[in-house]
Length: 180
Image 1 (cartoon, rainbow, N blue to C red):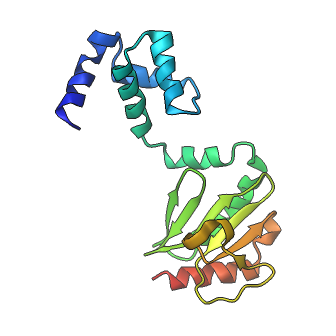
Image 2 (cartoon, rainbow, N blue to C red):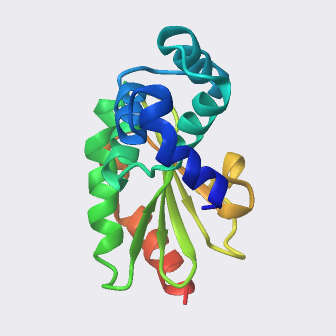
């Protein structure tokens, strides 16, 4: 953090009436679609100058959401898919102790040395499972990676726990084994 920003944070309680942590708590109570909406909220409702408002919003965004928060947010409005997600996670983790889970804003990656699987709640009724299976031919079920682009080579659409069958397990294991 540069010296000017440290000075701004140190002066924040005197100049704005609240510490950075207090401002962060206030921002957590609101939902903003854009950065500028949050800045304007602080300027209009709390009479914070633009420089302080902009810094408060930027510093609030830097806080990482917990992995669980990221996953929970992915399934808001898609709660019926969560048992499928949990089933996939259990199966993917069963391949070895070296599997790491890396949640992002809209998906969860499964990594060994490289990513080998990706789970994304695509719609309210479907999860897309991306797999890295280089050279594996496409089938009706094992599709082109589609929206995953280069992150995965294939995609499987999953609408129920029954879709997590032996064939899918074999593909997931193959992707895991190839990721060393």
